[in-house]
Image 1 (cartoon, rainbow, N blue to C red):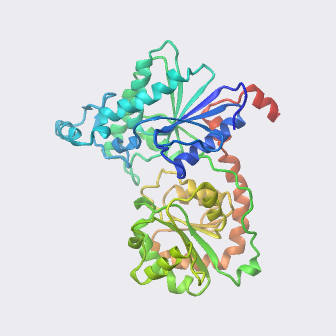
Image 2 (cartoon, one colour):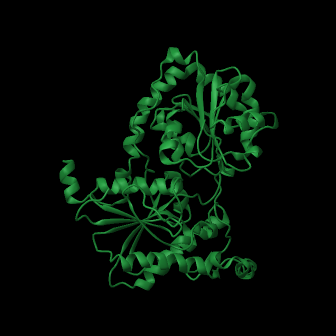
Image 3 (tube, rainbow, N blue to C red):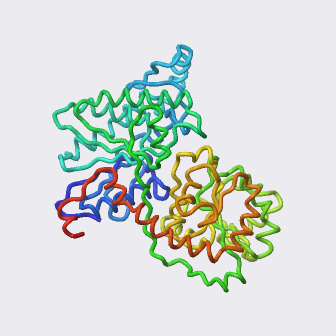
Length: 453
């Protein structure tokens, strides 16, 4: 993946602790886009990541990860502004006092001041030991408001003799639904106060959805919307023979390990509602990922023996009603899993995904797979871009509507599939990684530009 004599594009992500997962996938995609633009990609990761990824050179520099635990956004647990040393500032006296008392009781390695220093030390190690040049680029590919405090602390320590330009990609929402929270306002104040101290360095903020850019704008933070990248599909999945599909089950794929915001609490009821009417009848087959431990909590009591038998049989149900993958999948297995989809089902919490992108949905869309998604969030906006509800799938306001929508998918599958395949081309053009980097303002190098001309 290297390009001789090319400037480097450094990807910074302390969340990469092992193979698999969307943090490493995003880094790998951006690295591929960097090569297309004429850069030599490098990835700074957590120290637990001891291996290389394909041809991407990885540098294990970070001793901490999950900086967003202290974020003021919806994925964090903070309710007070902090300075670049992690000290609570602003807010009310009661909140400041509470955090000042609570922080010392956190584990030493996750106390705010220690996390900020550890992250800044990792960033400075990259800048100093790797001797970044003026034509090198830096991208913090999973950023948040707390991490920005660490970045600014590092930039201040560097001084202004060699000004750096850093691009920070923000993913996580500031507030749920449509009401700006008090914490979101503090988020804006904290970010802007930090950015005012960077001296001659330049920090560009980017949001992975337009709704997130709007949320940031509402609290005074300027961030440009960029398309979240997705891997090009090789087209080796099954080719749909509509007549054949009338005699076999359509494969519903529920991809990704379930978390609270991804419908973990709705899975049990959904499986109960569709088991007799859709899976037992042979109209559909359910393929899903479950955690290796405690998967029973997501499965109705009367189906646990069926799931257990499938898991013990390499995930295959002898009666072809289920496919159960337990744990994380490597890249090849995960892509094969997605390739098997006839229908993509999403049980995501719409309040959490009002402004948040779903990489899994994009992966379904570039495959031309009809989808069923929650209404009133970024996922349903993707249906709107394709022509509205019923264009390439359906949206729901309650999971109780899913059985009826599956009947509609079965009835309309031929038309849905054709429109989804046409929309796939548009999605891939917009969401390819080199376009993401160009939209961020990272220019193609002259050699790469001449090759493309």
